[in-house]
Length: 234
Image (cartoon, rainbow, N blue to C red; front, side, top):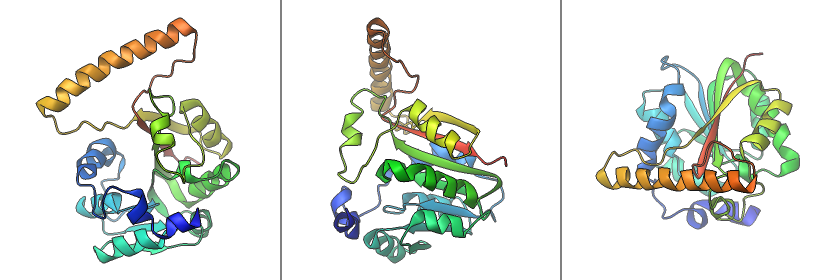
């Protein structure tokens, strides 16, 4: 997949510009987990087009940084004035920066890591956090209706997760303080969004009913994207 990551900005996203809607989405979904101390050390792993880095910057944090294995994403983000660097291996970088960060965001990254390397990466993530530090891990939700759409939307996706499987790898990696939440995409409060949320709620009721009738597993979070908020306590 190295050839795809070489020019990932062009072949993985809808246009070579930042997705403006993500700024408000990240703010409403994640800003409350960031510290009030604006001198906190922040890291974004897998920067993409830099929306999370731009949020960190606009929220007033001075000590933010991003890393990525894709030359095109680093070039793109550097050219718009964001603090980032190209790395050969993200896990190695995390291990090299032990006990360094108050918050690490891992947005749409874990699904790109091969199954046999995931626990190693999560151990590296834990090592990079300060005591009491928080990691935010966002990824496609394979327990959602039509979860396969996100799973196979990008050819570089290696594995998919639901709440239980993500909990398994987090626990084996040494995390014991975490919770999951759905990523809310409807954040503008418009009439159109309110109507969509109503129909979505009805759809999810039907999905849960069908799974109950089938005797299937019936996880709580049905958003197409979900996240783990993880804290380092030891």
